[in-house]
Image (tube, rainbow, N blue to C red; front, side, top):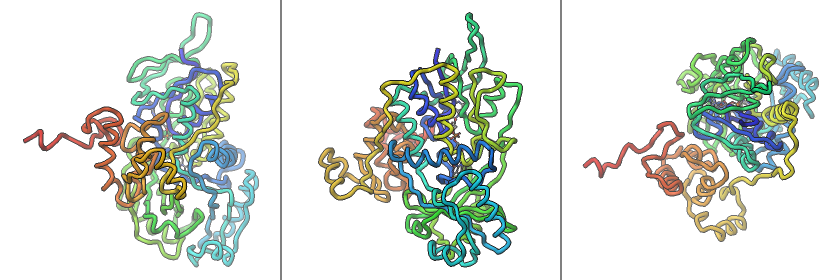
Length: 482
Ligand SMILES: Cc1cc2nc3c(=O)[nH]c(=O)nc-3n(C[C@H](O)[C@H](O)[C@H](O)COP(=O)(O)OP(=O)(O)OC[C@H]3O[C@@H](n4cnc5c(N)ncnc54)[C@H](O)[C@@H]3O)c2cc1C
């Protein structure tokens, strides 16, 4: 019998796992995909929101502000890329001023530090690339940008270093609440690989979190997947602005953001479309066209330097707020459901809250040998000449460039495969090292990552997948078919 089973290895499940790993408990994470960060956590804006947007008093507001503070600290202790670049909400017409002032008041009520309104002159001085049509802006200095993959992976790796077990390619099919002979409630979890019994279950299943909640509760919830499409631009466009630019919703539409990413690209998005299929992450010419049109409103000149597009799905619950806590009619079943934006920002704070609930339910004690830090994969692209020389001296494969767009070496890829919770797929390598994230989008490096992965895993190249579940690259060798 497990003490705790978490369903879902997105940023929410991984942050919870990391906080729970402070406690002396037997913890399991079940994930239907073949790696962490395969759901919404891999496809979002990567913004660490400051917290002026959510309605005061909501869980979104509380966990956003707390999470923002925690990410500032955790990016250092767990070594993942984060930058406090500040955010600006632009009013693109005079009628928008009242909306900006309302956001300022909301932010103050939520406890967001340093908020102030910038008038046009100061705004353009701070961000010369911003549209000259901007009238004023709300400036949030604590807003930031983070690598969503590496943040999630960092939480998960640190959880594993502290004894948590992740089981991938294991989908939960059913959950039944049971009572033991001594009257304790526990859960029998049916998965695609067998039955797991657990005293506590944590539902962090993203767009599927309503399915699991509704299996154990009479008080039903309902999630609508809301698709958001993005344009990702080349690093040549990455300097256009320093801050994240939001638009105040206006008669022109809901507004899209234009932001540098923490790795120096420029991103425009997202659209917002309610859909039915929780697996539909397709992009459309219409959506991408709209993004270009709307994004161009925020800046003087938006370059056409798109290198890829993608879409993510918001887990929008009908009530509009996060659902976090023990389900009333199912003791020991804890929801982290409806975690739409600002869920990436809020995740570490949700982790702390949920771990506190579990500690109380199971009367768990603190682990004496908890490892609080984790070291990321060294980046040759970011290293100083001295650091590069030291890495190459430690392992000459750090001198062998595999991904020329992002300057990723064989040493980094081997590190990504061989470390705690190492990469098992090409996407796993890509998210851990950035090999394939650049201008050519794996065009050049794929033929070199596949053999490296096959050799390290001791399998044939034909068995290597993009992201598990039969997503093979190689059908067979032409030589063999002759
Ligand atoms: C377009 C868009 C933009 C966003 N921008 C931001 C932003 O800039 N800043 C911010 O703070 N937030 C943002 N968010 C929100 C943020 O991305 C999410 O709140 C967060 O990623 C949710 O993480 P999660 O772990 O709850 O869900 P997910 O990442 O979806 O993880 C859930 C996991 O559960 C697994 N799972 C599901 N069913 C099963 C099953 N049957 N068995 C086992 N495993 C299962 C899934 O495979 C998945 O890995 C954005 C979201 C979207 C869609």
